[in-house]
Length: 92
Image (tube, rainbow, N blue to C red):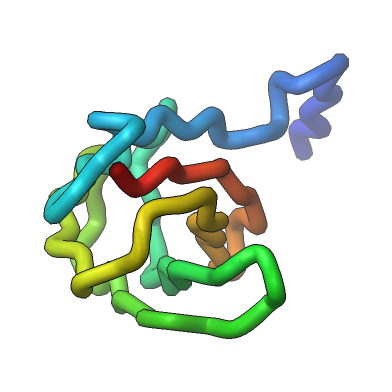
């Protein structure tokens, strides 16, 4: 039986989101592949979920088309069995 120890951020999946600022499309790049489906939510700073995407395929890179949004700052939440992370997104 093997036990894994994680120190610092080693257990977390790191996220890159680009371009940021964006206008109509973003790419989400994960530091490790998802082995199960996850949900990406585009959320206003007031907490309103504006759009949700299902990531059903296993991978590390996902391109998402954005709905028409007002200029400003939003949150991109990525939630699944393996992770729960958020990244700020600027819309220009």
